Length: 174
Image (tube, rainbow, N blue to C red):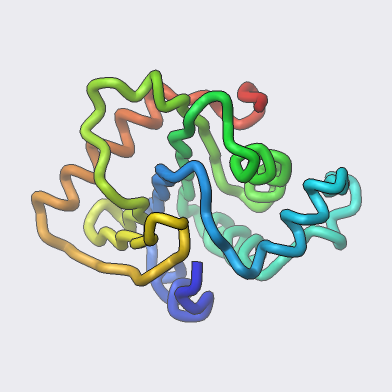
């Protein structure tokens, strides 16, 4: 996502208890991932034992924030069979877990009855929602933030419902 890491880092560092992230898309057009995605399609896989080769600033930020006791959880609602991008993303999610994130996967067919929002979001301490807005091709457009109680409570409910049904990363394979 094209929001600067430094501005997002400020938001995440200000969290006192929880930061949750709900991802709803099967494909993202992430310019900064193009080389890694192409290498993955050619058979390259990250080596969990070679941390220096895959550690990146985002993971350092997650480790910093979780070290102060903040819980960071990410849930991904995905179509099965998974898209090529989701299979790529799954292949390196162990890095998020290594940094301290908890990650779960929910097949879209198991999300029936959950009131999902239109956009991916981050929810900080159950009070501030940051929606990540993408175009139809999966290109990041912008973020919108709100503390409006109805939006916040809807996102809390959606995330909790997804989380309760989703599979922990180590128990979900693509």
